[in-house]
Image (cartoon, rainbow, N blue to C red):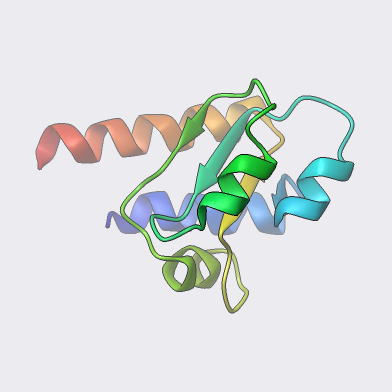
Length: 100
């Protein structure tokens, strides 16, 4: 996984532009810019957020890897609340896929 992508996630967390976990995302009343699911997120997690209309990504990161990138033990799903960070994350993942 591209370190630039992971460091952008960490930067977004430090800037207060990430929500971690299903409950915090469900409590957030505004639309989020991007949902990111861990590759091993349970179907229950995905179902619980299936009514959300935001775009989502599911990179090849486990819950542990995704959590480590944002400074916690595990994260099955995170939401990016800022459009600028969401765009940067999408661009970094697209560049990574092109170079693979």
